[in-house]
Length: 323
Image (cartoon, rainbow, N blue to C red; front, top):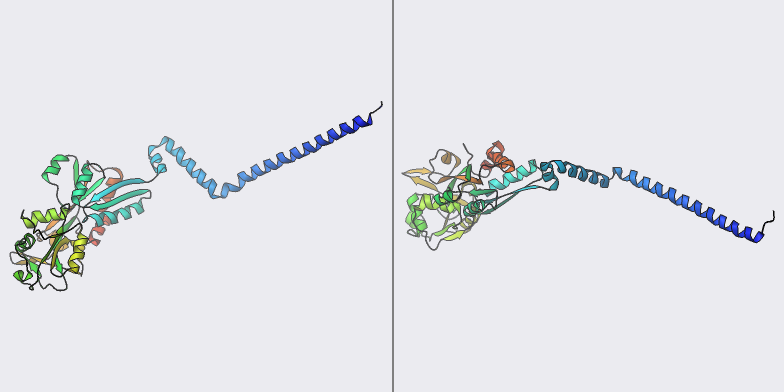
């Protein structure tokens, strides 16, 4: 057989090119497989793989379990608002409850008892706080309200501790001061010094209770300075010579002097003991209000406040535990 050398050279070149291509392709395929295998094994101990696994498990559980779906979706939130007197109890209890129940988010805000009653009535919050009883109009309007006492409190009448020698007043004298009938401390056994009257704003449950218990529907003096919280009154009285104010028991400190109340000749101090034995004349219940019987986490939270740990917080804040 006779071979054409020219044709043979061309064929050989084609074969050589094909062989090189096959070797190169085989190497690429093996290299790709090796990378894929390495990429699968290495991340199994890394955070990416762990995160993906957790998310997948959460989604799988959520698919057949509504409660798991809620947990997987995010935190459980409910809102509490109202009385600034009840506020420290609610906030401290919320902090402890959220620590014990990860994923729970309790939003606590003040604004006054009137705000708390209105917002729970309008279902803007899950719990309303009040430092006064509900009015007849509120009970008629919000028939589903459930009112839960969580603590007791006394209203202390306070004066500046630095320059006021007066230690006791009768309810009648307090009323005459807040109505403007008495304007100078010398008229109640003190110095010749103008009385600076400080009280709460109209949204306050403390003011409503003070009005009902002390003022007996008598109008307040027009020169009264109105504050929106117990803390604001306590601070103002501590910084103002001649001032008088009223706050919850939890807001008494050395910067102010709490007066005893003269009840038919007996001097009664504002204290846990006198509130419990009902000898102190300006005492009340602190309330949490829900629309209907509380359920779920809201019930658990209120139960926590009424339990041993919650009532210890009540005492720590200067209030009186539920007997």
